[in-house]
Image (cartoon, rainbow, N blue to C red; front, side, top):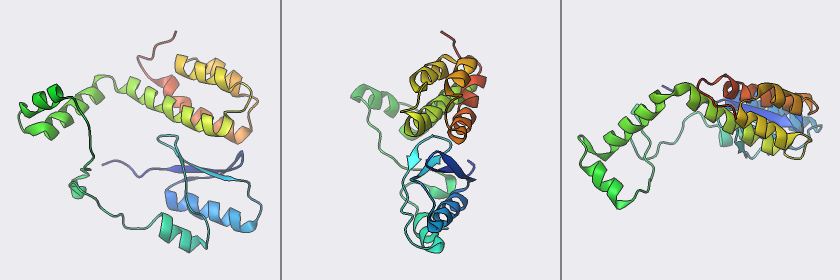
Length: 192
């Protein structure tokens, strides 16, 4: 079973909190209520995506609205963690899937598992690089060294990445380094 996602909040370039969503939202709302906060940015750590939340109201109101204890379940088999989503394939792909034992869903699950096991280090490195890229684009896209840091990230050149990000605000730099760490540790990562 997958672990609960973690989030990280920034007030401008300053770190606010990291952890489960409820913890991060509580810290963000408390800081906003003090009246000293810069624009608030909250990121999902695994993907590096910036997530928007309505932070107006009391801490309890925000938590009830944005991080309810019980998730609403959609289609699929939620107890097993199965989520139904739409995919699009060419007719020849659907034809092939229909001929597979146990149906299209089982065949797709097998293919995904095979791909995940083929080179897990490389996959982790790719996902880490994408997460770092998204975070860096949001928080450092206008900073000196941003483009060169991205090139170094995708080349797997940790030293150049650290050099190019050294002048960034400390909290932004440290979080970018943390997100990018697995990109540099990935086995089978090509250097160009």
